Every structure is written in C-alpha cells, then in structure tokens.
Image 1 (spheres, helix red, strand yellow):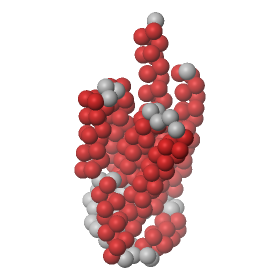
Image 2 (cartoon, one colour):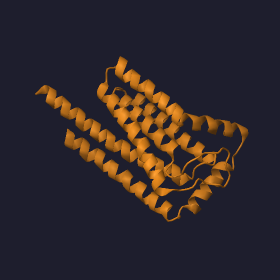
Image 3 (cartoon, rainbow, N blue to C red):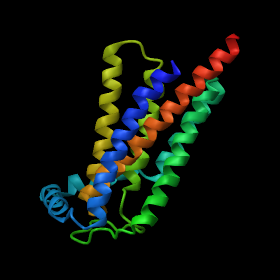
Length: 216
C-alpha cells in the first residue's frame, strides 16, 4: 500500500514541481509580461464597486487571519471531537510548512508587486502568491481529509467543486485588486499543490506503517 501511494502521489508531486519550475524560470527571466499584462487588463477591465467589494471579501478569506483562525478550529475539532490525531498532525504539517516554503520562495525571487493599477496596497514580495498558496494548502488539505470520510460520489464531487471555486476565486481577487501578477497566482497554486501532494504521500505512508505496526 505504501509503494502504491508513493508511486501515484510522488508522480503528481514531480509533475507540479516541474510546472512550478517552468513558471519560476519564466518569472526569473522576466518573460511573463505579455501573459501577465493581458490577464490583468482582462480581469480589471470589468472593475466595479460590487466586484471590488467581492474581491476584498475573497481576499480576506485567503488572508492569514482567516486561514489561521480556520486552521485552529479544524485542528481543535480533529483533536477534541473526532480524535483524529494523525490527521491533525497532517493538517498542521501542511499549513505550517507551506507558509515557510512561501516565505523562502518570496525571498529567493524578490519579485516586486505589479504597479499597473492597485486597488489596495500590500507589502512584501510578489512571487509566488502567499494567498494562493495558503488557500490551496489549507482548503486542499481540508478537502483531502473530508474526502476520506465521505462515501457518496455526489458529495465528493461537490466538495472538490467548492474547494476549486473558492481557491480560484481567491486567486482572481488578488489579480483584480492589483497586488499580484497572474503568474504569481498560478505559481502559488503549482507550488502548494506539489507540496500538498508530497504531504499526502507522507501521511498515507505513515498511516499505513502505523497500522501494520499495530496489527503485528
């Protein structure tokens, strides 16, 4: 079972690592301007008070305050009510290490934020998007944990759809608000997806190992 999880999950980890690497190379050599500018223009061309309010709300959902608060609630539920301590360890690992990875990557690339049209101001470097990485990691990890306990196909499809729409919407909000390039957002998704895949592989391997040890 361990080898099966390593084979499938590790392939996905490598795939998204390659995707992130390709994006990172383009960013490092300033070859994304044509793509970024077109997407920014397309997204911001529909600017309106209603969309601005929506974008700010979505950006807040992906902010550190909300993500940390949600994470604490989920960890408390896993530990106190569901007694899923191994899942608690996985969730804590994924969230904390993804944040550390984002900080390392931001300081490595030193990419300045876009100055085309900023609706809000944001400090720090731009690549990869911290909001995108945090949203994908936390909501992706939550989706994975819930998936394991949901048995119906319809509920699983709905779960994945909600996670996908919410994460994509948070990424859109960062572009709309003018604080991230599209390549920042996509790069953040790729990096966090790669890290989440590796974290899932390690979780499943550890779980299988502990089950075998318990049985015998």
